[in-house]
Length: 101
Image (cartoon, rainbow, N blue to C red; front, side, top):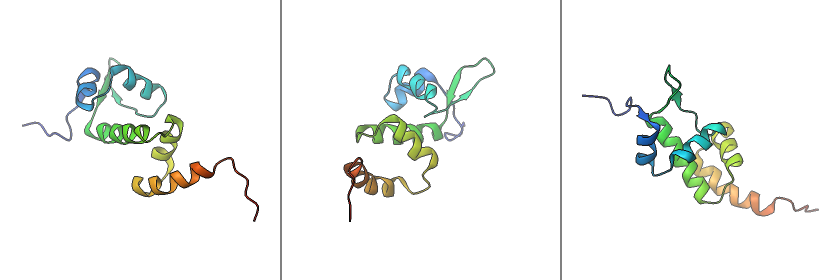
């Protein structure tokens, strides 16, 4: 019996499971937002870990975060995603405003 955590999906099957388009997956790969493994022939293959990251990408995108910021948060922010979301609305609401105290 195959281990579900080690199962790899080809791009079309992964897109169907994740509820996104193949085009979106390719776009995320180009932006280095979601980097699937590659076969020797160069085909993308996705794992359960990729699905977890994609779910985070989709959730943050739904909340209005730009892809560049999503990449930065997922790649460099060590805080739990919930903590990032609590601070993010405050930060983005005050960006570009100079407040003198």
